[in-house]
Length: 277
Length: 332
Image (tube, rainbow over all chains, first blue to last red; front, side):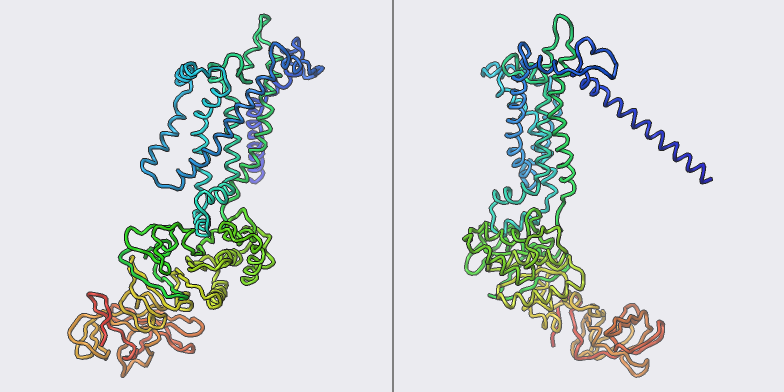
């Protein structure tokens, strides 16, 4: 009896392993394809052989004319960083207000902010285009930052509010009675305590801004083109240049991998920090 | 909160005592400025503080959950009030260390709050409150998160500290032992009003109304419904001489220690033992009397079996009479 139970458990474990393996393959194969493609010659790109002579030529090509990927890298970095640097302080203050102050129509305001997230981007891209054309900031980083703010701020407010809600009120009230004003409470107590959450939100916002494609595609044409849009440059008369797309793809993914690692650390810290009772 | 009027003397230790939800914490939070009264004025000294922010009221508060800053060391926690109140930096170290020694935290200054035990956290909260000399000290159930033994120790330390510092203190608790041991005066609160404001002795020995009588004392005072006739209290099961009174419905209150266990004959009343408990220092005997139960504190060597019939003698000097209607004490 116990033997058959044990062997059944073994079988279940094995099936579980198979399912996980399958899922991992589905997720990892495209990434493997991109990574290996980035180091292949164009002629090898569709060959599924595991052994090939790696080359860094692709990376050299994408940073040269006519692709000039470095410019796009700079654009992407500046746009994403500016977005995060504006979003996080403002979103933190807004989140704090939503978390701690009871205001008139507070629920309506909060739901409205969240509701902007449910509007499909493709619906509002045209008004943005016309607006930016009229005020003459089409194809500028400023326009991209503005668009990204409108997309990311609601998300950041919602996320940071969750972390601030978790800070015990006692601690803040203690700071008030100890002699702090409201701004000091936020700076000295709330932000340090919510820091893992704020950092997590910052990283998420950076990723969203970094990967933003649709708006960048429509709003930029030349000067302010970002990396994801830059990928579409690699269509040529000889067809799609997969080896270059792969190399550029790696340039897009690399910061994401670094940030994902950071997120993991802060996310866990954010979860376990908790309150001191 | 309902029409509270309370004045606290300088250097007094006032305890707000009452069951949860009676408004004692709200009262204290209004003094601290964390809650706004819908009407009425709050004065600290001669200064009206209604429109003052908490930081401008010169109060210090110890919270039930301590409200420590988890991202700061013990040293930083204690120093925080000095820092935000712009006390000259040169004095910080000296003040923090002096205070830490006073609450026996001297060697834990570099720890984070999460590395401390409950009692130690409690001391940090206390140190943070006394590091500067506030006008008023507010404590919101500061001992309720500690285990029983520690609570007794900290109680004594609080009492000592207040005696030493001579700072006006408002202390909120639902624990009557804390109230009795710490307070100069106790305000017993019930449903947003102050039921009685008096010294602990008088709160215990001379309750103004049924609520205070029933709330103070452990086990609580026995309360029997009946009526008075010619100085005698008439109960459905018996009658007993209770001092004074005419024809009216009353509630008779008597504490377990003012009842005496006797043999079943020639006594005030008798009944069957419902339960018998040994507390260590004394015994508690609960006796069924018609529809009521009486708890009697007996000597510690007293033994009785459940369902045995015992007699009970009332101490007529210690019977309290309350008007059943108004719940107020009837005084002779």
